[in-house]
Length: 104
Image (cartoon, rainbow, N blue to C red; front, side, top):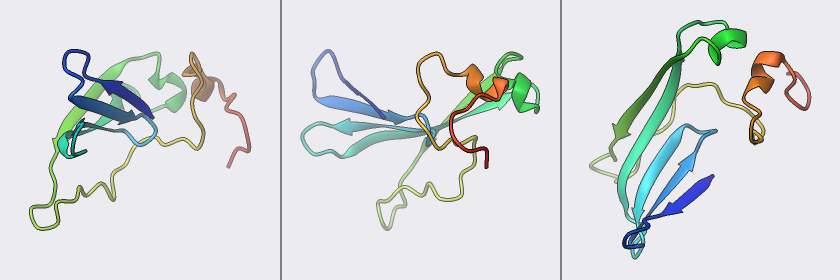
C-alpha cells in the first residue's frame, strides 16, 4: 500500500496497492473516489521465469462504480498475485525461484 498526497494543494491523495493491481485518487475532505484504475502487466513471453527480462506492456484501465450501488466491482479480476510484500529490488525473486516461505 502506498499513499501520496497532491503536492500542490494537498486536497487529494492517491492510494495504490501493487499486490491487488489497483489504484485510486480520493478527495481529502470527503474520501470520495475521484478516479479508480486497475492495471496489469502483459509480458512478451508466457514463461514466468523470463517475463521480467523480456519486457511487455503495462495495461492501465479506468474503472467506474456501479450506477445503482456506487461500488466498484473488482471481483473476478486476474493477475499474478503474491502472498507477501515484495521487498525493494526483489522483483527477480520470482524468476530465480527464491521467494520466501512455502512453495504452494
